[in-house]
Length: 336
Figure 1: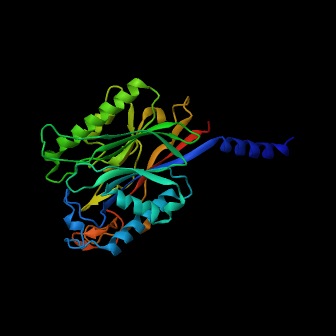
Figure 2: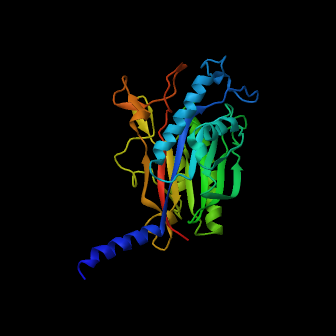
Figure 3: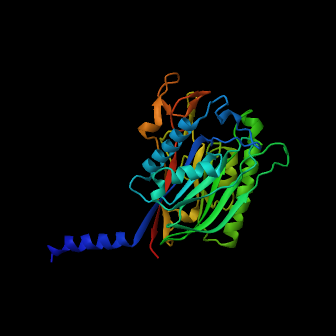
């Protein structure tokens, strides 16, 4: 009997593994993926062949290949059905990304529309149609009642069913930048946070078991007032996986001078924590990961250490990847 026990344990492990499915969900601010066409309705002049950045076909396609390389490194040996992106100019750029790189081997599609942003850079969601079935899509417009002249990116909301898993409510964000000063721009990010909070509260009020994943470049840190609007409510239904309670001793996702910041974040509804035993779906390890792959980094000669290897340094083409690092979380669920 004792000789048979290891064999029994082996088959028990195989059986349990066969009953679970794991997916990786990622977000990446790709830094200025502009196409080569002039959009007369936006301020994209710098990223034209005649513009200050002398954006041309070589630079554009190198950028596309760099994004593909990054996404494949994030994927690793996992299944990557959902990818949030920021700083995408157009559907043309997204089509080139999924059809002019080996991504075409997957059945990827995307959700995107032209938001009112002055520069014409938007958020987008890539998804594998074989693994994520779209149920509902909404573009949440952001209009500031206290500054009607300023335009920013919409929030993308997508509800869909993950194959052999559960229904997810995904939000992709790119909040207003700090350009012009932190204190001046903070009310705008707080306003976007309040809009997002209204939507997530509505979802949870209608369906207490709604599974929510919020991703994006928030241009604020996990401890900022805008993020606290999402995480510090009485109900405390949203958890920030990039906060100090869940991520310790890690670098940030972007660097300004000699300081690292966690502007790119992943938040989840509390019912996706592994501690919620009754659930058949949870975030593995209750953690998010920042991808600081060697090829995404370079030496920081001025401020020491390392920094993201970006596409441009000022107006000079640098040939890198992005000024932000990608992030991801892993979903584990029992097959159903």
